[in-house]
Length: 332
Image (cartoon, rainbow, N blue to C red; front, side):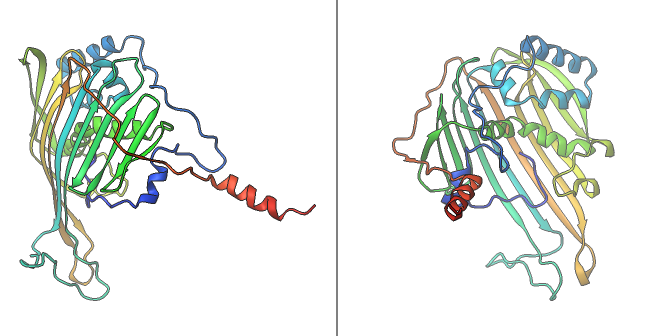
Protein backbone atom coordinates (compact mmCIF):
# COMPACT_ATOMS: atom_id res chain seq x y z
CA UNK A 1 0.00 0.00 0.00
CA UNK A 2 1.88 3.06 -1.15
CA UNK A 3 0.35 6.53 -0.78
CA UNK A 4 0.52 8.52 -4.00
CA UNK A 5 -0.02 12.18 -4.83
CA UNK A 6 -3.41 11.36 -6.28
CA UNK A 7 -4.64 8.22 -4.51
CA UNK A 8 -7.69 6.75 -6.10
CA UNK A 9 -9.13 3.38 -7.06
CA UNK A 10 -10.87 2.91 -10.36
CA UNK A 11 -13.85 0.65 -10.87
CA UNK A 12 -13.17 -2.48 -12.87
CA UNK A 13 -15.56 -3.86 -15.47
CA UNK A 14 -16.51 -7.55 -15.38
CA UNK A 15 -14.45 -8.32 -18.48
CA UNK A 16 -11.27 -7.51 -16.61
CA UNK A 17 -12.00 -10.37 -14.25
CA UNK A 18 -10.62 -12.57 -17.02
CA UNK A 19 -7.13 -11.32 -16.26
CA UNK A 20 -7.19 -11.49 -12.49
CA UNK A 21 -5.49 -14.79 -11.88
CA UNK A 22 -3.92 -15.34 -15.29
CA UNK A 23 -0.15 -15.33 -15.32
CA UNK A 24 1.36 -11.96 -16.17
CA UNK A 25 3.27 -12.97 -19.27
CA UNK A 26 4.22 -11.31 -22.52
CA UNK A 27 3.27 -12.62 -25.96
CA UNK A 28 4.95 -15.87 -26.84
CA UNK A 29 5.79 -16.91 -23.27
CA UNK A 30 4.36 -20.10 -21.84
CA UNK A 31 2.16 -19.90 -18.76
CA UNK A 32 3.83 -21.57 -15.83
CA UNK A 33 2.18 -23.34 -12.96
CA UNK A 34 3.02 -21.25 -9.93
CA UNK A 35 0.64 -22.82 -7.47
CA UNK A 36 3.37 -23.96 -5.11
CA UNK A 37 4.21 -21.81 -2.13
CA UNK A 38 7.54 -20.03 -2.79
CA UNK A 39 10.60 -21.77 -1.41
CA UNK A 40 11.87 -20.44 1.89
CA UNK A 41 14.75 -18.10 1.29
CA UNK A 42 16.79 -19.43 4.21
CA UNK A 43 17.33 -22.88 5.72
CA UNK A 44 16.27 -21.60 9.13
CA UNK A 45 13.96 -18.62 8.61
CA UNK A 46 13.18 -18.30 12.33
CA UNK A 47 16.87 -18.00 13.23
CA UNK A 48 17.44 -15.48 10.45
CA UNK A 49 14.45 -13.43 11.59
CA UNK A 50 15.70 -13.43 15.17
CA UNK A 51 19.15 -12.32 14.01
CA UNK A 52 17.67 -9.42 12.01
CA UNK A 53 15.68 -8.29 15.01
CA UNK A 54 18.66 -8.50 17.35
CA UNK A 55 20.75 -6.41 14.95
CA UNK A 56 18.04 -3.77 14.83
CA UNK A 57 17.50 -3.87 18.59
CA UNK A 58 21.18 -3.10 19.11
CA UNK A 59 21.69 -0.51 16.37
CA UNK A 60 18.17 1.02 16.36
CA UNK A 61 18.88 2.30 12.85
CA UNK A 62 16.55 3.23 10.01
CA UNK A 63 18.07 0.72 7.59
CA UNK A 64 17.48 -2.09 10.08
CA UNK A 65 13.83 -1.08 10.50
CA UNK A 66 13.32 -1.05 6.73
CA UNK A 67 14.94 -4.50 6.46
CA UNK A 68 12.50 -5.93 9.01
CA UNK A 69 9.46 -4.45 7.28
CA UNK A 70 10.60 -5.53 3.80
CA UNK A 71 9.94 -9.24 4.50
CA UNK A 72 7.47 -10.58 1.93
CA UNK A 73 4.32 -12.49 2.80
CA UNK A 74 5.74 -15.88 1.81
CA UNK A 75 8.25 -15.65 4.65
CA UNK A 76 5.78 -13.96 7.01
CA UNK A 77 3.29 -16.82 6.72
CA UNK A 78 6.12 -19.35 7.13
CA UNK A 79 7.02 -17.68 10.44
CA UNK A 80 3.52 -16.88 11.72
CA UNK A 81 1.33 -19.67 10.37
CA UNK A 82 -2.40 -18.80 10.49
CA UNK A 83 -2.96 -15.08 11.03
CA UNK A 84 -5.24 -12.16 10.26
CA UNK A 85 -3.95 -8.88 8.83
CA UNK A 86 -6.17 -5.80 8.93
CA UNK A 87 -5.72 -2.15 8.18
CA UNK A 88 -7.69 1.01 7.53
CA UNK A 89 -6.18 3.91 5.63
CA UNK A 90 -7.43 7.29 4.45
CA UNK A 91 -5.83 9.40 1.74
CA UNK A 92 -6.53 13.07 1.04
CA UNK A 93 -5.07 15.45 -1.53
CA UNK A 94 -6.28 18.95 -2.46
CA UNK A 95 -4.96 22.32 -3.67
CA UNK A 96 -4.11 24.71 -0.84
CA UNK A 97 -6.14 27.92 -0.59
CA UNK A 98 -8.85 26.74 -3.00
CA UNK A 99 -12.33 26.30 -1.54
CA UNK A 100 -14.81 23.82 -2.97
CA UNK A 101 -18.44 24.75 -3.52
CA UNK A 102 -20.22 24.01 -0.20
CA UNK A 103 -23.21 22.43 -1.95
CA UNK A 104 -21.76 20.50 -4.88
CA UNK A 105 -18.22 20.02 -3.57
CA UNK A 106 -16.90 21.09 -6.98
CA UNK A 107 -13.67 23.05 -7.22
CA UNK A 108 -13.74 26.38 -9.10
CA UNK A 109 -13.12 26.45 -12.87
CA UNK A 110 -9.79 27.52 -14.34
CA UNK A 111 -8.87 29.58 -17.42
CA UNK A 112 -8.83 27.70 -20.72
CA UNK A 113 -5.53 25.88 -21.15
CA UNK A 114 -4.70 25.75 -17.42
CA UNK A 115 -4.61 22.46 -15.46
CA UNK A 116 -7.87 21.84 -13.65
CA UNK A 117 -8.05 21.73 -9.86
CA UNK A 118 -8.23 18.20 -8.51
CA UNK A 119 -8.98 16.84 -5.05
CA UNK A 120 -8.94 13.21 -3.97
CA UNK A 121 -10.36 11.42 -0.96
CA UNK A 122 -10.08 7.64 -0.54
CA UNK A 123 -10.90 5.48 2.48
CA UNK A 124 -9.54 1.96 2.25
CA UNK A 125 -10.14 -1.14 4.35
CA UNK A 126 -8.31 -4.44 3.98
CA UNK A 127 -8.62 -7.77 5.75
CA UNK A 128 -6.51 -10.83 4.95
CA UNK A 129 -7.28 -14.12 6.69
CA UNK A 130 -4.52 -16.71 6.17
CA UNK A 131 -5.60 -20.19 7.30
CA UNK A 132 -2.81 -22.52 6.12
CA UNK A 133 -0.06 -23.85 8.37
CA UNK A 134 3.57 -23.59 7.17
CA UNK A 135 4.17 -26.02 4.31
CA UNK A 136 0.48 -26.41 3.45
CA UNK A 137 -1.18 -25.34 0.22
CA UNK A 138 -2.58 -21.79 0.34
CA UNK A 139 -5.91 -21.21 2.07
CA UNK A 140 -6.91 -17.61 2.53
CA UNK A 141 -9.49 -14.89 1.99
CA UNK A 142 -8.59 -11.32 0.97
CA UNK A 143 -11.12 -8.50 1.14
CA UNK A 144 -10.01 -5.00 0.10
CA UNK A 145 -12.52 -2.14 -0.22
CA UNK A 146 -12.72 1.58 -0.88
CA UNK A 147 -16.50 1.76 -0.48
CA UNK A 148 -19.63 -0.41 -0.05
CA UNK A 149 -19.65 -1.37 -3.75
CA UNK A 150 -16.00 -0.82 -4.61
CA UNK A 151 -13.33 -3.38 -3.89
CA UNK A 152 -12.03 -6.84 -4.63
CA UNK A 153 -12.26 -10.21 -2.93
CA UNK A 154 -10.23 -13.34 -3.47
CA UNK A 155 -10.68 -16.74 -1.84
CA UNK A 156 -8.13 -19.50 -2.40
CA UNK A 157 -8.49 -23.11 -1.23
CA UNK A 158 -5.63 -25.36 -2.27
CA UNK A 159 -5.73 -25.35 -6.09
CA UNK A 160 -9.02 -23.48 -6.58
CA UNK A 161 -9.68 -19.74 -6.52
CA UNK A 162 -12.77 -17.51 -6.45
CA UNK A 163 -12.63 -13.82 -7.29
CA UNK A 164 -14.97 -10.87 -7.64
CA UNK A 165 -14.67 -7.13 -8.20
CA UNK A 166 -16.95 -4.39 -6.86
CA UNK A 167 -20.59 -5.58 -6.67
CA UNK A 168 -20.31 -8.13 -9.49
CA UNK A 169 -20.69 -11.87 -8.95
CA UNK A 170 -18.06 -14.44 -8.07
CA UNK A 171 -15.99 -16.28 -10.67
CA UNK A 172 -14.40 -19.68 -10.00
CA UNK A 173 -11.16 -20.87 -11.60
CA UNK A 174 -8.10 -23.05 -11.06
CA UNK A 175 -5.36 -21.30 -9.10
CA UNK A 176 -2.78 -20.31 -11.68
CA UNK A 177 -0.20 -17.55 -11.79
CA UNK A 178 1.30 -15.48 -9.00
CA UNK A 179 -0.89 -12.36 -8.92
CA UNK A 180 -2.35 -13.51 -5.61
CA UNK A 181 1.12 -13.46 -4.09
CA UNK A 182 1.64 -9.88 -5.31
CA UNK A 183 -1.58 -8.84 -3.57
CA UNK A 184 -0.53 -10.53 -0.33
CA UNK A 185 2.88 -8.87 -0.50
CA UNK A 186 1.15 -5.52 -0.96
CA UNK A 187 -0.80 -6.12 2.25
CA UNK A 188 2.27 -7.31 4.16
CA UNK A 189 4.27 -4.25 3.01
CA UNK A 190 1.63 -1.72 4.09
CA UNK A 191 3.72 -0.60 7.09
CA UNK A 192 6.86 -0.49 4.93
CA UNK A 193 5.12 1.83 2.46
CA UNK A 194 4.38 4.33 5.23
CA UNK A 195 7.90 4.14 6.63
CA UNK A 196 9.25 4.74 3.12
CA UNK A 197 7.02 7.81 2.71
CA UNK A 198 7.99 9.23 6.11
CA UNK A 199 11.68 8.33 5.81
CA UNK A 200 13.01 11.67 4.50
CA UNK A 201 11.48 13.51 7.48
CA UNK A 202 11.54 10.98 10.33
CA UNK A 203 13.87 9.35 12.81
CA UNK A 204 13.62 6.58 15.39
CA UNK A 205 12.74 8.17 18.71
CA UNK A 206 12.98 5.06 20.87
CA UNK A 207 12.71 1.27 21.03
CA UNK A 208 10.97 -0.23 24.05
CA UNK A 209 10.87 -3.94 24.96
CA UNK A 210 7.60 -5.05 26.54
CA UNK A 211 4.92 -7.75 26.47
CA UNK A 212 1.45 -7.46 24.98
CA UNK A 213 -0.97 -10.26 25.91
CA UNK A 214 2.02 -12.35 26.97
CA UNK A 215 3.85 -11.91 23.65
CA UNK A 216 7.30 -10.22 23.78
CA UNK A 217 7.44 -7.26 21.39
CA UNK A 218 9.45 -4.15 20.57
CA UNK A 219 7.59 -0.85 20.37
CA UNK A 220 9.28 1.52 17.93
CA UNK A 221 8.37 5.21 18.17
CA UNK A 222 9.17 7.65 15.37
CA UNK A 223 9.65 11.42 15.55
CA UNK A 224 9.97 14.23 13.01
CA UNK A 225 13.53 15.06 12.00
CA UNK A 226 15.61 17.06 9.59
CA UNK A 227 15.43 16.09 5.95
CA UNK A 228 17.14 12.83 4.91
CA UNK A 229 17.17 13.18 1.13
CA UNK A 230 18.99 9.85 0.77
CA UNK A 231 15.87 8.06 2.08
CA UNK A 232 13.51 9.24 -0.63
CA UNK A 233 11.75 6.24 -2.20
CA UNK A 234 10.28 7.69 -5.35
CA UNK A 235 6.83 6.85 -6.69
CA UNK A 236 6.34 5.54 -10.27
CA UNK A 237 5.42 9.13 -11.18
CA UNK A 238 8.14 11.07 -9.35
CA UNK A 239 7.03 13.69 -6.81
CA UNK A 240 8.41 12.81 -3.37
CA UNK A 241 11.88 14.22 -3.96
CA UNK A 242 10.44 17.74 -4.33
CA UNK A 243 7.77 17.45 -1.62
CA UNK A 244 7.94 18.65 1.97
CA UNK A 245 7.10 15.57 4.08
CA UNK A 246 5.83 15.99 7.64
CA UNK A 247 5.51 13.09 10.08
CA UNK A 248 2.70 13.91 12.49
CA UNK A 249 2.87 10.58 14.33
CA UNK A 250 4.30 7.12 13.80
CA UNK A 251 4.57 3.94 15.88
CA UNK A 252 5.17 0.26 15.16
CA UNK A 253 5.02 -2.90 17.25
CA UNK A 254 7.44 -5.66 16.21
CA UNK A 255 7.20 -9.32 17.22
CA UNK A 256 10.31 -10.41 19.15
CA UNK A 257 9.96 -13.99 17.89
CA UNK A 258 9.79 -13.21 14.17
CA UNK A 259 10.71 -9.54 13.66
CA UNK A 260 7.40 -9.02 11.84
CA UNK A 261 5.18 -6.01 12.45
CA UNK A 262 2.12 -6.69 14.60
CA UNK A 263 0.74 -3.15 14.79
CA UNK A 264 1.36 0.15 13.05
CA UNK A 265 -0.14 3.63 13.10
CA UNK A 266 0.88 6.68 11.08
CA UNK A 267 -0.24 10.20 10.26
CA UNK A 268 1.80 11.85 7.51
CA UNK A 269 1.27 15.09 5.60
CA UNK A 270 3.07 16.47 2.59
CA UNK A 271 3.08 19.63 0.52
CA UNK A 272 4.33 19.96 -3.02
CA UNK A 273 4.48 22.67 -5.66
CA UNK A 274 3.10 21.84 -9.12
CA UNK A 275 2.77 23.88 -12.33
CA UNK A 276 -0.40 25.99 -12.34
CA UNK A 277 -0.54 27.53 -15.78
CA UNK A 278 -1.33 31.23 -16.07
CA UNK A 279 -1.88 31.56 -12.33
CA UNK A 280 1.64 30.44 -11.49
CA UNK A 281 2.73 27.45 -9.38
CA UNK A 282 0.18 25.77 -7.12
CA UNK A 283 0.64 24.18 -3.72
CA UNK A 284 -0.93 20.76 -3.16
CA UNK A 285 -1.35 19.29 0.31
CA UNK A 286 -1.87 15.60 0.95
CA UNK A 287 -2.39 13.46 4.02
CA UNK A 288 -2.47 9.77 4.87
CA UNK A 289 -3.68 8.17 8.09
CA UNK A 290 -3.07 4.49 8.67
CA UNK A 291 -3.87 1.98 11.40
CA UNK A 292 -3.06 -1.71 10.97
CA UNK A 293 -2.59 -4.93 12.91
CA UNK A 294 -1.44 -8.51 12.39
CA UNK A 295 -2.94 -11.11 14.73
CA UNK A 296 -1.28 -14.55 14.97
CA UNK A 297 -3.98 -17.21 15.39
CA UNK A 298 -3.61 -20.26 17.62
CA UNK A 299 -6.12 -22.19 15.52
CA UNK A 300 -6.65 -22.08 11.78
CA UNK A 301 -9.70 -19.95 10.91
CA UNK A 302 -12.43 -21.23 8.64
CA UNK A 303 -12.19 -20.13 5.00
CA UNK A 304 -15.04 -21.29 2.76
CA UNK A 305 -15.78 -21.05 -0.94
CA UNK A 306 -18.60 -18.71 -2.03
CA UNK A 307 -22.01 -20.35 -2.16
CA UNK A 308 -22.48 -19.51 -5.84
CA UNK A 309 -19.92 -18.72 -8.55
CA UNK A 310 -19.75 -18.77 -12.34
CA UNK A 311 -16.89 -20.50 -14.16
CA UNK A 312 -14.29 -18.07 -15.44
CA UNK A 313 -14.57 -17.82 -19.25
CA UNK A 314 -11.57 -19.28 -20.99
CA UNK A 315 -8.99 -16.72 -21.97
CA UNK A 316 -8.00 -16.66 -25.65
CA UNK A 317 -4.28 -16.11 -26.01
CA UNK A 318 -3.51 -13.58 -28.79
CA UNK A 319 -0.84 -15.67 -30.52
CA UNK A 320 -3.10 -18.76 -30.65
CA UNK A 321 -5.99 -16.71 -31.99
CA UNK A 322 -3.73 -15.17 -34.63
CA UNK A 323 -2.42 -18.58 -35.69
CA UNK A 324 -5.94 -19.97 -36.06
CA UNK A 325 -7.13 -17.01 -38.13
CA UNK A 326 -4.08 -17.01 -40.40
CA UNK A 327 -4.36 -20.78 -40.83
CA UNK A 328 -7.74 -20.26 -42.42
CA UNK A 329 -6.21 -17.93 -45.00
CA UNK A 330 -3.40 -20.28 -45.96
CA UNK A 331 -3.46 -21.65 -49.50
CA UNK A 332 -3.51 -25.37 -50.37
